Length: 264
Image (cartoon, rainbow, N blue to C red; front, side, top):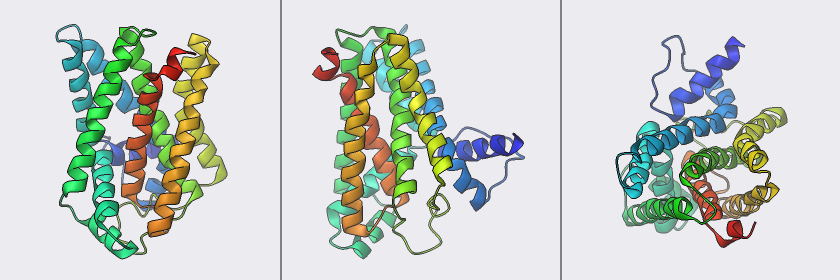
């Protein structure tokens, strides 16, 4: 039990800026094993964003509260995944072969593709979440489970890359290299279940199995990105995982504000 607690705090320490107990050390083995708790980090980040939204909507216009909840989630993770998404936009937008793409993604500077992609991503998140708030099938409290589901399912989608695909960088000094070591089928199954739990709980509460349809576009996104990354760089990198998380999170929000949801 103590081992699992240590792995959870390792994941919390790596993926967020939440302070962790001092006895939690850092090791590549723990970091690799802790990826099973990546979706649980989604519970925490999504729950924090939902909490900020719920409290602030009593004091500010709904749009302001919503934007501040997005700010809270970004601060909580240190823009960890947003940075990966921007790097992928720069790398694949400006690179023409594997070496050049990897080199650009490694560069800490942000380029035109990254700025444009990140700006559009954040704008789309805001607009889709706003549409959820004002949707005919929703009320104010409905945004809370949508945020938790979006953050947890998106991280489970990114986690699946570690199980199904190979890491693209050959050098051992990459920060994401320990994460990229293959998960066992059991570890992947547990991580996937942890990612699905909020969705399953919400579907059971509403007695609406149609909610599970959100898994279809997520599968399509994962399949497309996997083929795209493999074609250009032969696998994935840590930045690719961050980009996958961001795109998958947006896909969840798009589903919940779409006409598909309105007809279910």
